[in-house]
Amino acid sequence: MTDKLDGLKALKTFGTSGKAVYPLEGGVEAELFAHEGKGCLTHMWFGGNWPDYGKLRLRVYVDGEAQAAIDMELLMGHGIGFQDPAAPWLTRRMGKTGAPSGIYNTYRIPFGRSVRVTAQLPEGDQGNPRFWYIVRGTENLPVEVAGVRLPDTARLRLHKLEGYTAAPLEEFAMCDTSSAGVLYQVTVAAESDHWQYLESCVRAYIDGASEPLVMSSGLEDYFLGTYFFNRGPYHGDLAGLTHKDEADHSFSAYRFHEDDPVFYHKGLRLTLRCGEKTDREAWEAHPTTYTTYVWAYQW
Image (cartoon, rainbow, N blue to C red):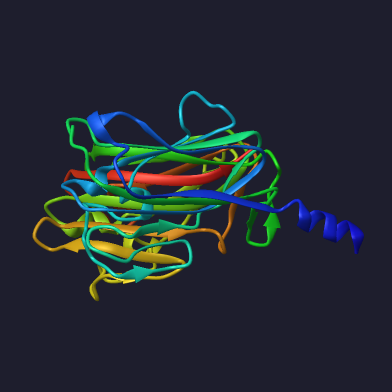
């Protein structure tokens, strides 16, 4: 009992908030929060209203790294492509409650010595918008995925592919790492002149395997949709469709693997294909432009 109480006493919550502040003037990278110690971030929330709000660049630096392993656009980092304004929607791990802001997440972002959170306007935006934010975390809080406590050395990493145009039937990597780890979340935003690219299967090449674990029977199926997302947007804890436009055949969707783990020990290459081909049939999509965010805990 004493050991358990001592463990609980080590859990210390920290954080900060900014109310109607102006840290972003001149397009500089502004530090919103810094903390020294060991633990993990547990909550972030952002508010404001200006053009291209969704392209605000957020970075999380852990343990003194010079280049942030988490470097994301605000909306894509929360599963939303094409700056889709739909709201309100809320899930366990992220959501959007207002127009255009009220963006939040409860990602567990672990660190061993220190953590810094910064924000920066997109390139070319030299305004000075009013900004609101909340950052919170807990010292000595472990991270679990599917009930498995991750090693203390585990760190959340973001693998990005931005504005990549794939040729018909091209298979390309969204993530290619040689570390050990577990897949956490995937977001895909894509557009083309036809929906045929949704026939694609997501493939995971685990631990250097030459043959993949096929993760879906189609791209919309990977995000738990069906028939080219024929019922429109949805938002759930496991997956969601955050954008769909019939005019330009664009969509964005997210998929969490927190309760559906994909562990790897010697590397992971996660791929997508522009259309699909089987032994009997080919669904050859037209050239398609993709932005993908793949999150993984690595150690």
